[in-house]
Length: 301
Ligand SMILES: [Fe+2]
Image (cartoon, rainbow, N blue to C red; front, side, top):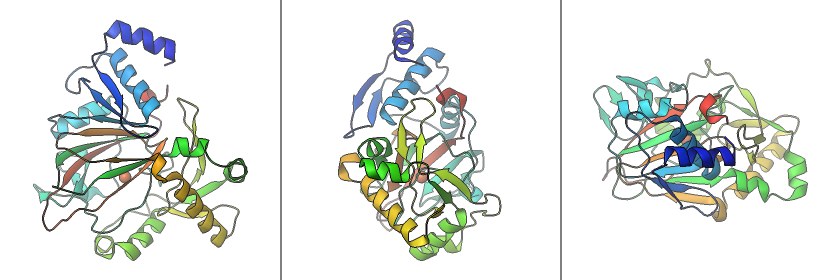
C-alpha cells in the first residue's frame, strides 16, 4: 500500500493506534491496535505499513493465550511449524516455545549459552517473512531480545564494500548451525534434532531487497552460514565477521527488555535479532513464537 492509499485508509478506518519510535533508527511501540477478534482490512494494512516502516513493532500490555496469538499471526499469512517439533505446543503446533519451562507435554527451547545474530528460518528455501514473539513469563532480569537494523546498516556501508558484497550468495545450512551449537552450547545440541535432512543447504543473497519497500538490507547469519559462494573459506569467514560487526554496531541496535504481555513482531526481511542470557537457576522464562512463512501475500505490499 503506498503512502497516499495508507493515509486514506487510515482516515476511513479511523485508526485507533498510536506509534512511537523507540529504537535509534527503527523499532516502534504501538498502542491501541486491536489484537483480538476481527480487524478491518484497512486497519491491518495500516499496521503492516507501520511494520514496513519501523521493521520492529512492540504492542505492550496484552493478555493473549496461544489461540489468540495464532489467530492474530494468521492475519499475515500461513505459519511455519518449527523444525524442532518437541518445542511446540501440542494443541497449537504453530507456537514455538522458548525459555526454561516444561509443562503439559511442552518443553520450551532453552538456550543456556550464547546465541548468534540471525533472521528466523534462513535455512528454508523461502525464509520467514516475519515473526511474532509474546512474553508469557518474564525473568526478573535478562532474557532481552536485541534487534539490529540490517536495512540502515546497508545504507551506511562503504561504497567499496557495497560493490564487493552485492550479488554474492551465502549458503545457509542447518548442519552448520548444529556444529556451531555443539561448539558453543553442547548441552543443548546433544538433545536436539534439527532435521537437517528435511532442510538441505540453501543459498541466500548477502544483500536482499525487501519485496514491499524495495529497501536493501544485509542478510548475515553467522552461525548458519557455511560459506559464501565463489570465495575461499578464510576470506568468507572474514567477510561475514566484517559485515556482522558493521550491522551490530550500537547505533543500529535496539534492545527490548520484556514485560509480561508484550507482543513484538519483526520483519525478518529487514532486521536481525539475538537473545541475551538470564539466570535460569533463579528465574523462569516462557515466550511463545509464531513464524509467518515466506511469501505471505499480506506482507508483500
Ligand atoms: Fe530467532
